[in-house]
View 1 (tube, rainbow, N blue to C red):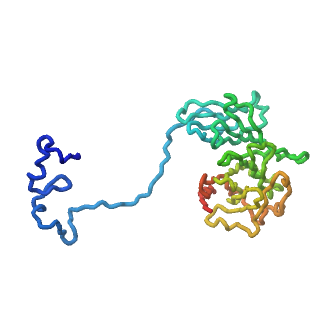
View 2 (cartoon, rainbow, N blue to C red):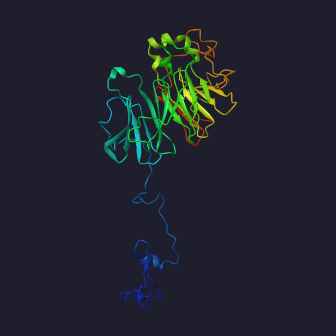
View 3 (cartoon, rainbow, N blue to C red):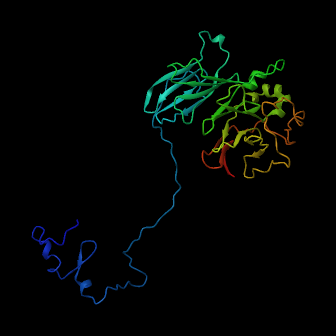
Length: 357
């Protein structure tokens, strides 16, 4: 309680409290006659300290982080969910499976809205499935989803409740006569990511990374070869199901680099600025430069220079384009770039590696 000393009394006692007492007042509200009568306030402690005085001791303990389920959004998908994406409005998110995309409110767990449905009336007429979906980073009404045929569709939620028609379609057509049994399998898009500014979309199929401009749907602005050395081995990859591996992709926060995973716990980083020939292969391990070779640059493939040539090293079993052996049993499928810092996180087997450049 703060008292105003200028007042003459407070309930008849405030004015005389300081002068009528001859005892020393202590900070804890008590008083001490002995302390008040001492010429100085020096207190002497016996050697070895006081046995009755107990001081708190800080002990370190290992913190165990426990995940707690706060809410369950159930019974809205008939197939496995392949992607979720939160909206920039901070209130909604989408979940996608092979045939449908649902829109949810974060606060409502028992109701969702179906905004995309590619399920045909007869399942025998099904020709493609949804592989990934993501909201635009700044436009809350825009989202993109990819398909197993290698196409990316941009839709606007303001057009209709059920977005059967897309606003834009991004796809690259194969040259006539180049189709094979594996063409559609390796063209399936496993992951898409918007750039932070929303101007570009990065897509990953089995063989390549592609960078798309949302204002130009005629074709990708750049193509980066990732698994071209595996093209002669597609039959073997199909037999052991490795051709169906789903690799993720990511962009740096400044939009100057893209990255994706590969086999042998390797990941590739490419520079995507115009004219850049930067291409680096790193291994997710304590020594990421262990698999690095002297000449590692690979030019980014543009529309004018895009070719399907088989690089040297592809004809040797188990040897990649750099002359290193590859292991199909160890694969780096998941990685993510920090949105503002130049750091990247990679998940390899049961370990998480973080690198900062």
